[in-house]
Figure 1 (cartoon, rainbow, N blue to C red):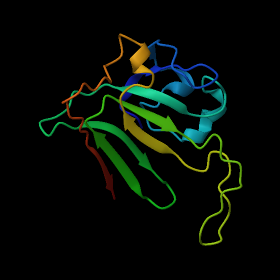
Figure 2: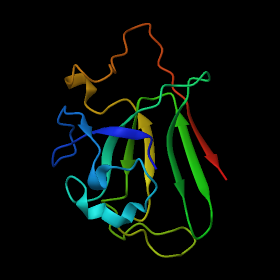
Figure 3: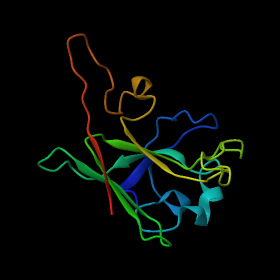
Length: 150
């Protein structure tokens, strides 16, 4: 589950178009669901590689809820919180089976994993209505992302 009602669509080369769109259909990850259920129904039909606009205002600790993921078979849960306004959800769309596990287990095939990459919005330097990513001389950039596992 991703704590977002909006996302920034991208073109066929994964460059944001500048639009901020309401999540619907396969792009709506705001409710619990298996990511693989409609993975080929995403915008480009390749899987998830999209920036989601987080909806929650940061709490007193400066963190907002980003995502919760769980593995039904093992019962493992991962909760992500961050100071960043967006999260890129990526589902290993370009894994091709050539990457092997160190323990000799099966190779990583397409969509073998998911990443929640907390960030500013991609291509914000070209999109005046996106939160600024410009860091001026003398300014300091700091961000915090917390992954809790249970």
